[in-house]
Image 1 (cartoon, rainbow, N blue to C red):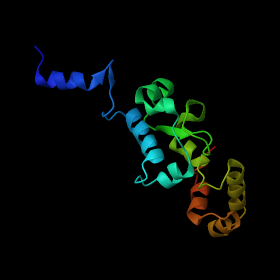
Image 2 (image 1 turned 60 degrees about the horizontal axis):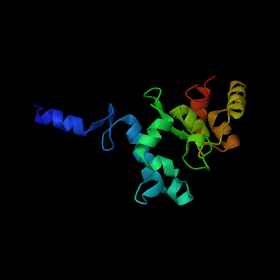
Image 3 (image 1 turned 90 degrees about the horizontal axis):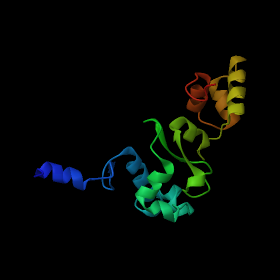
Image 4 (image 1 turned 90 degrees about the vertical axis):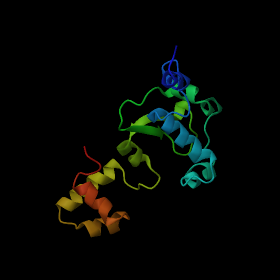
Length: 153
């Protein structure tokens, strides 16, 4: 006869996979994606749901999302969209690192080519504040570029 603890464990697992309501990293990613797109109270709703970003109908079911996306390759990977103007769907999503996501963010104004130019100009004597003004970014962004904290090659 099963113990009460075994009964609870069996109710929370299906085919070796934690069922919705559990706290796997993939489930948390799925839940966050759904919340950003459909819950007006979510802090990032204005960047997703308010902009018309939706989740494909198939992915409204967590098991379909997991079947399509698979497991995160590493703990450093998060769910990202390839084209930030399009919806969450298999053809537009991938597991990516935060650095990869940051480079595609609508907030970021730099490209790798510009980062190279910043580094070159800095090596020729331009100050971080001068570069920040020239490239219309915060001086801490310039510091991160020239100190190889971001845009490493």
